[in-house]
Length: 178
Image (tube, rainbow, N blue to C red; front, side, top):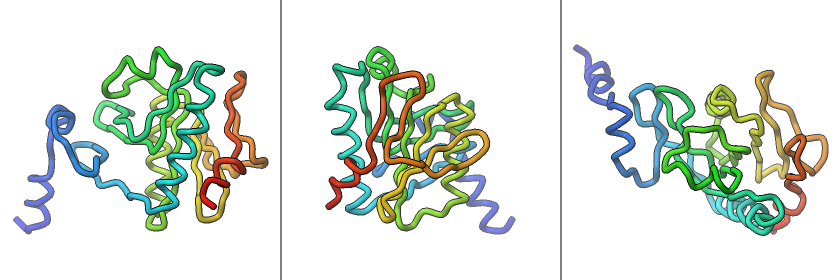
């Protein structure tokens, strides 16, 4: 058997094995394989903190919690780790590994990210039932929303959760990168 096939078979693990293993940095789990996530550089980390601060400072008003890099079970054989997750207070802390759709999943592009791979991640979030999926590009200072029909550039700097007072001002969070 060629080495690549041997390595592929050896790389398969169970969901339980994945959930009971620590990875540094943490990795996604996709159909029996551990996948490294593209990690950000300075702007990625700064933006992640700015988003966290944005939602944390409005916690009492909106009743939400913001959590960075939370393992989220998006399907029977898939666990993804959004850069930022926003959920209502009660739901946010009820699950060690998220199994119910959070209110918002936010991904931040890194220089090494490739759009086809990012779109697969976003589609996994959509299939889980997350209806507010935001993709932010710190290099270009723009945001996108993702839905079942694809990626759409935000028309204004205000990204909103429909039917709620919850929003994020892109100009303000991107200003934290200056």
